[in-house]
Length: 250
Image (cartoon, rainbow, N blue to C red; front, top):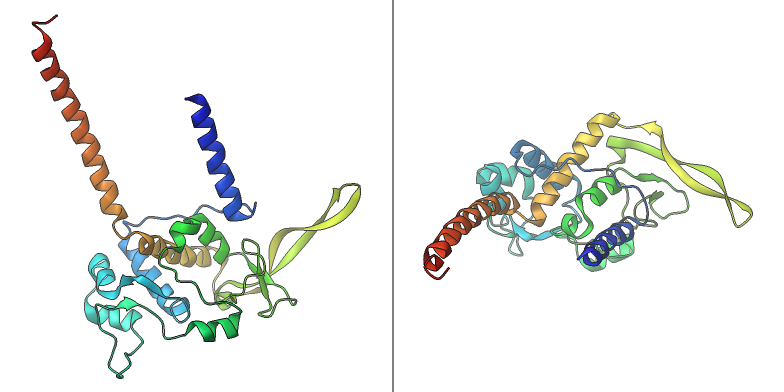
């Protein structure tokens, strides 16, 4: 049993290291029960992500129902597209974008990934750190690079809010040679938000993306505690029943 537990723990560490590329990941303050945060995150997602990235596993009316918004609010916040006949996109439609994969490939070098499950696939901490780790890199086509996702094709769409960061390097010894490695990022041009405001903005956005990846998770967790309580009560009843059946045998 000890070997199994140790192997499992090492596997978790290895997966986290692989997912982050050995970069320290900041803890994302996620709370999918905070509907105000989710509403702000939905607005941020619509403003900064939804023009390129779809969330095709989610429907608009599901967001409205879960976050306590009516159809008019959801349409005003998130629905900007029309169908092939020119009619407004239906309220019950999946969240798809008009940008084609061919256009995205030509513009960014690769199709923009669907973000429905990205927070579950990468982890909330990865997404939170990634969105806050862009830095100026003149050698990249977009002029930007990222600590977490090296040579990413995505431009930094949040730079006006966060500002521009530059890399700061340090010299280390490696096999008897001095080499420069990236140490940290330093703000070189302030944005429209200070650091605390931008962290809150990003936290709300990531919170919404975590909700997107599993809309029923709050209900699932609540139900899980009820199931555990039922099993505890059932165990007591089953144990007393067993004693009653076997009392004459013993």
